[in-house]
Image 1 (cartoon, rainbow, N blue to C red):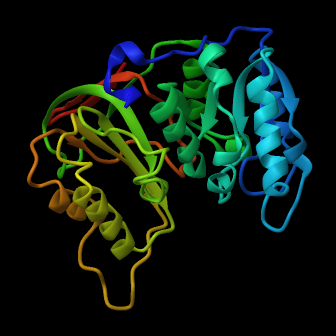
Image 2 (image 1 turned 90 degrees about the horizontal axis):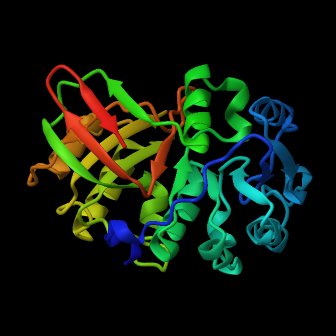
Length: 305
């Protein structure tokens, strides 16, 4: 697959003041106007264009499947648009991904920003075009986002160096790993397994996050990845926010770190818990598709590009 070699990676141009960016909704409809997002991006010197989906509604979606696909397609085709922000996640991207022609991005690469349900687009672009994307705060989340997470988004978009130092978790597995960063929402990675949007995991550093799942379901998804031989040849594993996890009346019996280490116990690559990314106010930006260095030590975890 294209992501197997560093030479294949196609880095979009970083943004500069005066660039035009777009906000579109490929999944769930918005509950309020995107005023905060527009204001923030404007302060960064960007010109913001809102898609037709921003004000659209069709059941739970931001317009019907054709409208959402066409809105994304319009911004992919428009060479004046330098980055595309998914306004929110939710559910719905899988309904439109096969309606969209992403091939213009091979000639005119641009950043696509989002997380959660947008994991599907990140993976699809990496698997088919070797096009990096930004896993980071979306317009819907900006009112509740930490100032630091928004600054990491600006840094990722404008090409400033990203590096993170985080506190260790006692269940971390120590070591050093290096490879292209892939991943995102665990549920979406399971949803695309075996499809045209699926990625080659071998030699990669895998990042995972999720929200609102039952503990047993997380365990099942992790074991599904293992059974698909996705986990054995990783260069490293980064576990982000697994927020609002639920348990049954009869307790599952393992914490998230315990179940992760149970699943990857046969392997030797470094494992980092508690990275601040996912469904969190402090959802720090990660550039998926770029080479990353992961160093998990007793006193500190370092992640750098």
